Length: 142
Length: 142
DNA sequence: TTATAATTTTATAACAATTACAATTTTATT
DNA sequence: AATAAAATTGTAATTGTTATAAAATTATAA
Image 1 (cartoon, each protein chain N blue to C red):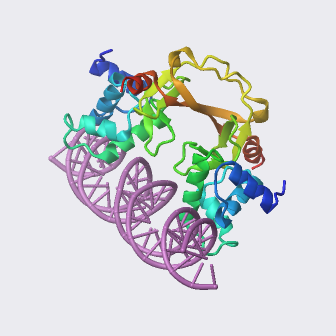
Image 2: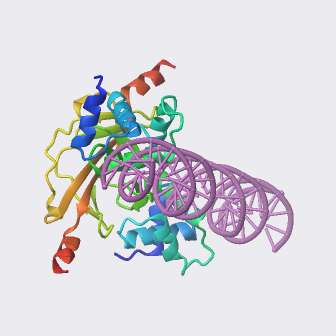
Image 3: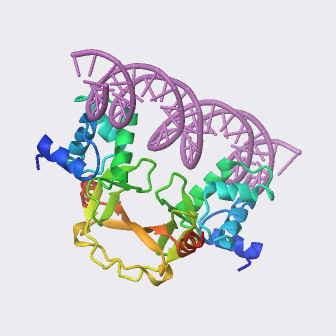
C-alpha cells in the first residue's frame, strides 16, 4: 500500500517522466487514493503539503501523466475530468446520488465489432450510471 | 427518412413534450442528420430557418429531450456534448483524426457485473476511440 | 564553484461550453 | 379581450481548462 519515494521515482522514470516533488506527490496521492479524483480534488488535498502549489501545475502534471500512460482520463458525463491511476481495461460505475465511482471487471470479450472492421481502436471506455447499493439503502432507511 | 410535421408532432407528444416550432425543427434536424451533433452544430444549422433562434433555446430543448428520453447525451472525451436521437443501447466510436462518431452494435451481453450486484444501472456508455478506416486510408495516400 | 541553459512551476488572464436569470414574446385559457 | 401559463430570448455569470509569460528550480558545463 505505502510506497517509498524511491519506488515512486522509479515508477515515473519507468514511464519516461522526470521525477519532481510535485509529480511524486501527485503520483503518491493517486496511488493511495483510489477514488478517481478530479484535478481539484488533488489540488485541494496537496495544498497542505505544498502550499505554493498551483492548479496549473496539477493540470500540467496530469496531462503529462496521461500522455505517458500513467493515468487514464475518465469522462463520466460530468464537466470535470477524473483521473484513474489504474490504466488497465476495466469498467466504471458512477452513482448519480453520491457521485462515487466504482470499478468493475469487464467480463465479456471486447473484440472489435464488425462495423469497425479496419479501424484502429486505441482506447475503450465502458461506463455505467445509476444508484449504488449504499445510496439505495440510505433511501430505504429515511 | 423524411418526416411530416404531423409525425414529428406525434413523436414529441408521445414523449410528453408539447410541440413548438423550435422543438419540431430540432427534432427534425436530429432525425435527418445522424451525425451525433453538438448543440452548436444544431444552432448553426437552424439559424437559416429560425433567424431569431438563441443558443439557450437549443440547450433548453436538448435538455428537455434528454429528460424525456428523446435523445441520449454523449460524453466522448471532449468538452462539447453530443446528442444522439438513437436512444437504444449501442456503442460509439470516435475517430480522433476526423472527429466523426460511428455507431456500432454491442455484440456481447451487457449484464450487470458481480461487483455491481444490488446496484441500479440506468444507463450505459460504451465508447471506443481511435482512427477510422477512412482516415487510415487518407494517411496512406499522402 | 559559477555561469548558463533547460526545465519546472507559478500567477494571471483568456477561453469555451454551459447555465442562471429576468425580460419579452408567444400560446393557451377564461 | 383579458389573463395566465409557457416558451423563447439576450445578457451575464459560472466553471473547468488552457495559453502565456515570468519566476523559480534544477541540471550542465566551464
